[in-house]
Length: 269
Image (cartoon, rainbow, N blue to C red; front, top):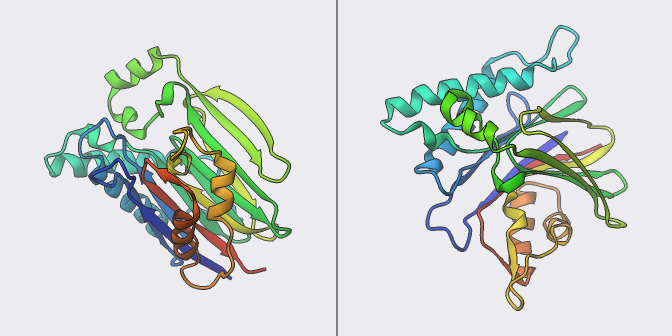
């Protein structure tokens, strides 16, 4: 059994929440989030369009082959289908295509596995059956994520290429403060597969969890400490992420400057 939940909070320095997140347990368990770029116009709308199109892809397109396994090219197909349909919707609404400058992270489960597809930056957090907490932090050089929207704008895609940015995936194990970093091309696919038998929690989040600033020295709080606070689950029933996230925001003696979207699964083994 998988319990699905999510939480959304606006950043203290934002007038409009540019994160968006949706989740459900039918037809399969899924969580979908998007984080709009603050320097582009109407990305709060773009994030919503992108999330709901990803939901449509999950609901109405067969993800697994006849053997029950999700093919590796599903990552590319989902991203391409979402952004090209999003372009048509944005145009019909009179919005500039730059409103689609937003990340996309999709978590879904089929069979005994959970899959995470990351387009842009963000966090993938997972806790094993022994309560060992680990997470991946996906970021880009110059704090410039590669958005799916560049695929529908060759001029901006070329400009991004000329920036020579790279993608960084940092593996963190909270216990023991283990950290390993791997750099790769900005357009390399970023996907993860988890066995449901090995893990009790699988979560995804926007990079807003890394935006907490200490009120005394104005320095950024350690991300591992923030994630630990957001994952101190005492009750896994119902809205377990909403309850824990609200408590964490009260307990953490720092202020989040960016929007926070976080959602995921509790797997009852």
